[in-house]
Every structure is written in structure tokens, then in C-alpha cells.
Length: 415
Image (cartoon, one colour):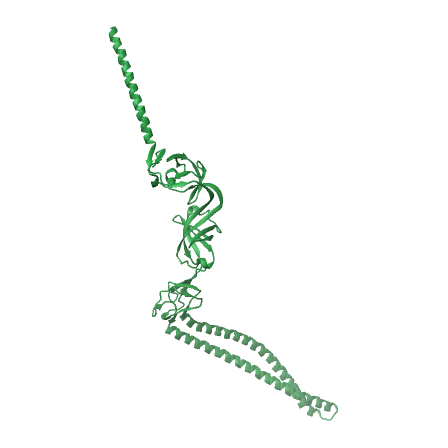
């Protein structure tokens, strides 16, 4: 019985020893395996490295805009006809009033001649009536003058005979014919004077009405004659003639769009911005555009708040001399930048694809051939930089490229 108990004790020691060796081996394996899972070796040349800097920071957005003229003038046909002759070609510069082409329309010309003849006849009738009124006025003046002359002569005879009658030189029957004629001429003068005054007032009224009527006829005559001027198509403004695809002999309808004229002396830039900036972009907001190596100032002039497919339209003017914008072409694409606020000194982290993996909560920071995860806090951003609130200092180098292949590792060994 004593020998059997000794064997059981030795067996238990063996079990404990075996378990201890197995546990130690498991611990060693786990430690080695953990170190293997927490780091990975990468080629440094395959990564994009950025340096944290201390520099002025300002918010801005990059946009792509197209050059457009401030004013666009349309060339339309005022009348129908066929193209008789062309005086300008598509793409050529024109001045306001330059003749672009001439139309032919025989029916219109005949109609204008007929209407012109009718109006001239009406004008002649009006002038003839005015002539008759003036002649009647002269006749009345002539009769009135004759009566006044006769009355003046008769008055002298009346006064002489009246004195002779008073002196009993002549009899009453000799005086009465002279007196009767004198009174008759007085009445005739009064009647003619009254008639002349009435007729003069009526004549003046008629002449005013006829003058207004004549002026209307003359205006209509001018308008009728100007209809033929519409056969000459002219440039509505100075600038570049475009979309003028017209051929000699081509039939043109009244009101048909024939082309456009525009000028880029004061161009504008039209761009589409994300609806996120609808309440941030304002009239007068500053920006810049780089053209042929020169940085030109921009200023927002119009905002169209209608959102289409997540974007809205803005228009900006270029504040630059004509010499620097002379080479611009309508529809040309330009890269422009709009600023928000004023610059201030900040710690800045270069933008990169890492943000898609970390959301800006951490980055890999390089140090002595390795890259370690580090928790950071970012603030505002622009297309080039993030504003660093904590976790990084100027001079730190970080991996800017994407972290998709190795974001689960704490340490990167860079070869």
C-alpha cells in the first residue's frame, strides 16, 4: 500500500511539469505572433510622404469655369428674303452698324412703292387743302381792305355833306344817299371783320390739325421707306461675329436667327459650385485665376441660387487690364480659386488619401526608419492642407498616401 501512494505523487509532478512547459511554449509563441501582427515592412519609395508645416492658412475652393462675354447680341432678320450679297464672314470682328449682308425681296419692294405713292397722294391733298384755306383767308383780307378803303372815302363825303346840310347849302334829299352809303359800308365792314375773325380761328385750328396730319403722313412715309432698309442686315454691336453660317441665295424668314456678336473686352467666368457652398459664397467675394503665368484677381458678381444636380451657378469678373485677357476665347476653361475669410498662421498637414481611411483621427508619423500610428485632431481644410489642432508639430513627416493595405498595423518598417 505504501509503494502505490509514492507512484501517484510522482505522476502528479509529471503532469504539472508538462503543463508548465506547454504554457511557456504557448506564451513564447503568442509573443512572437503578436510582434509579427503589429508591424509590416514596406518600401518607402512606394509611399507618398508629406511634411507638417507652419504657414498662413485660408479656406478656399477650386472650381473650373468657362469664359463668357458679359453681353451677347443676336443678329436676326427683320424681313424675309433671299441672300443677295454677303459682306462679312463667320468669326470676323465687326463694328456696330457694319453691313453683314443684303436681302432681296421684290414683293416687299413693290408693296413699299404702293404704300409710298398712297401716302404721297394723301400729303398732296393735305397741302392742297391748306393752300385753299390760305387763299380764302387772303380773299377775305382783300375784301375787308376794300371795304375799309371805301368806308374811309365815304366818311369824308358824309362829313362834308353833313356840314353842308347843317349850313342849309344842300337839301336833305341830297344828303340821304351819301349817309345811307356811309352806314352801309360801316355795317359791311363790321360783318366782314366778324366773319374774318371767325374764319381765322377756324382756319388756324384746321391748319394745326392738318400740320399734325401731314407730320403723321411724313412719319409713315419715312417708316415705309425704312422698311427697305431692313433688307440690309447690320451688326447690332461691335465684337466677334459667330454662328453666321449664311450662304448667298439662301432663303431667310422674318425673325430668323442669323448669328451672334459678342465682345470679350470685359469677360466673365461662369462656374458651377457644390450646393454645400450656397450659403458661404457671396457677391463681392474675392478669388484668383492663373492665366499665362499671371495671377489675376476675381470677384463674384452674380449668384444663381437654383440648385441643379447638387450644383449652383456663379459668375465672376476678372479684374485685369485688357492686355492680359486679350488672348481669352469664349468657352475656354479656367481653373479658379475662391477664398473664404483672411489668412492666419496655423500648423498645416498636407492633404492626401489617408483621410479616407482614418477620417483625420490618426496618421502614420515617420521616425528613424519606421512609421507609428499617432492620434491627431484636425480642424478646417482646403484642397491643399488640413488645419492641425493637436497631435502634430511643424517638421513632422507623415504618410499621405492611402492606408488601405496596412491600416491594421501599429508600426510600419520602411525599407
